[in-house]
Length: 244
Image (cartoon, rainbow, N blue to C red; front, top):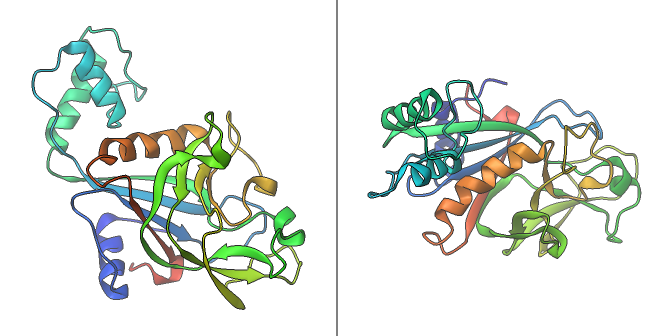
């Protein structure tokens, strides 16, 4: 799967979706390869880099650079110590060259439920499989299952799901459609490490394989929380729809 900003922009144009320049574009790409219970989809976040506030001291600059996903020359998070050495200066230089330009990060997620919930659906109509489409202003920063240790983007607007009720352990993008509020959140899996299989982590949610990746996504969303009135748009496309 070749993913570039231009390819995604072309896909959005083809599908009639809105491309945002004043907030992050949050995009899920559902792979064409169906492998049950495995994290094999992509989450793309694309946004235009805004300027650093004026008047920050060194410690505040380091914190701002870290929160905006600028890393040191060693590729690691900045140490917040108020001392501008090679890593902090490298991050600052990267920011200066990125200012006003679009940036993209991609991470591994699942856009499909795990086999447990496919075989044991909570809803009598079947397990939820989020239908591809653009869902405007349907997620807000909050907590998954209301747990303060699990910050997430929680569903706050109606979405459409397919109801998979054949209990064969494989997610289907067909069948009965259901629109409403189902707790289809965008959250992490295990709190540490790389989660090997989906299992109970998704009953329709969009789930990151690694917490550290999810934290980075939330860090950018938090920069825009006030500006967008804590309403975020998520667009789910299929790999076969992406422009090459």
